[in-house]
Image 1 (cartoon, each protein chain N blue to C red):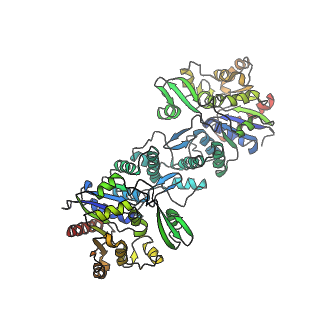
Image 2: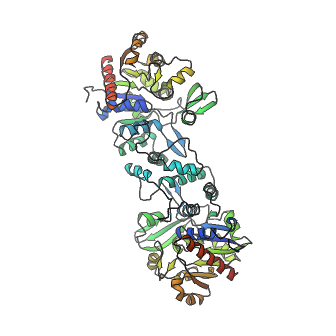
Image 3: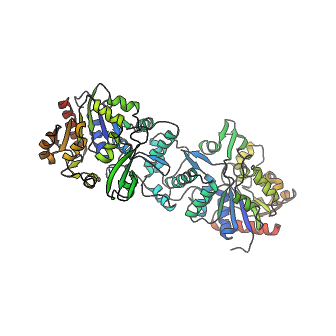
Length: 318
Length: 318
């Protein structure tokens, strides 16, 4: 356990953020740690509500995640998809047999009138996840991608079309009208809040959906705790996913410095990978205190190491 | 192929009826054969509409049924149920991973506003089942069992409580108001109808739900084609399921003769197993032409044999 006594909020997307939150969970007491999770990727598929990032966090923290992919469940089987294919069903989005239990349970609880926040809490309880996972809003915010092939729903762009279409613009449908649930508002206005961490997630697809909610952005600007982002770009490339490709398509140089500029005034601190240590002074010059350390999270020690560096950095900024 | 040129309607529940319809399908052209299927067992489970008897017919005719059980799919896997159990979900009714594809597809098509008849037709097309399967009504009819433990929904009685509670009475909720879909009405009033066969299903749980729909019973009484029932009771016992137990609880002697009396005036012909050939004259005395033959359907030859006997019997009654 760390000596860090403050509470920590992490703004996060899926895989990379889940790894960081897992690292933090090994250093902090469960009640110290809250993850506010992107729901812009959520969609209804085969009549079931799917929340990919919430599930990645939940499965990672429950130690049930598929270690090969970083998402989905370990020991997954695919009989349902095989049978669905025989019924000429939609098979471009793969739902595993075990994973279906989550979606069907969530569908039932939502149909009973519960909020996504309450449903997430119940699923976490059942999987013995004691870090608090909060959807960024209980109201639907849906990321859509304006591409050369027209406006695509996020999962159509990301999974069905493998993020191949060239991106012109990304929109967050519903964000303007979305309100924060009371738990999220409480976490962000908590007197004991010691750090707000923006996970090394894709800024456009995973973090901007959160920041596009006016109430959430406003709460961040009012927070006393330092806000620290970790660059998802290392040496001009993303660890995983299309972040660098999208930056190129949007006319932004894919670099850690661009990520810092992207978040801009919101940040008090920024962490780049040690491979980008020569960018530290350039980013510092923009007024954001910046450090370099290992940000690759290949194993649990790496995750705990990055979590430790991030917490210590937050303490130094307080 | 049989020389039987008329069309055939089978009124049926699940396993036994499915075997008979499979036998008939080997003798008749697909367009000659229609099964009108009990939906009194249907229920919503985990938010999904489940139609056990329709599925048993469909899987049997698609040659995908689990040969060990007579219901469900062959090569089924159970990862979903395992994961659902870890989520403290309801696991008393077992939904296999492959089987879920049927329920989720049906749920989607029904949610799109299609009737159960249209949905069944689509599922059959996708599984290359060309016998016409028709739900007895597109309106919900729900079998409920009045027991010593109170009124139980059918699947609670049958699956959860393993048909153990003592039965006082069986009711068919919604039957009075149920209308026939146009395809069912057309099949029953077809000028070329050569036989109406009541499958060797449980009369109380599988056939009476159909007969309790006034429009369906009326169409049967008006039909010119002979109506033939096959006894599900052989030598005082049922091949499968609680038929004999329920008859005892209702104060009816479990015998083929009691089954004939149960259907009574509706019948023109009755088939008992060869083991019950000494009952033939007793049943004949009630005015129902009766024959004895092998009615056990252990293998495909048996199914075709019983189908052949039934068709020939119908011809003799025409």
